[in-house]
Length: 137
Image (cartoon, rainbow, N blue to C red; front, top):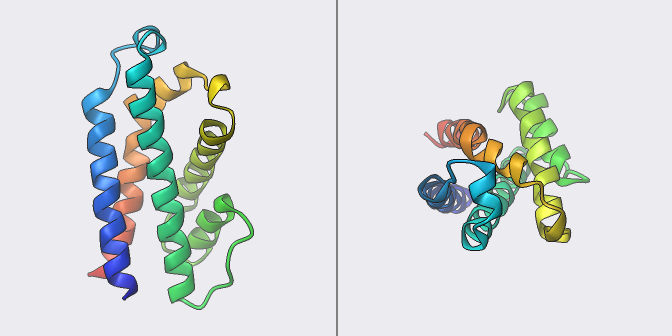
């Protein structure tokens, strides 16, 4: 059952990444002036982080690990279990920080950071997805 859930979440993550890639702005200045693009990117980045957290928690539960006390801790626990690299765990913890800002205080989002995530940070989500998928094969 957990494998089916993880595969569904991987597919949802793939769709979120595709939406981000298809709506990236060429610059933070363009992003700041495009409210629709802001919504699409922030929603899908938030969704991507949440999907990764959900998968991390599923993987930990499948291995009999205790539930993490925070979203970021889920990635640290995966690194300790050897499922993802420690450096990736740190970057995913930072992504949780972005998610928290996007969800709880949307008005204070730094669109320069969103631009950088969309331009350079998607590889972390893809690396996480590869690690999850590798555990399913």
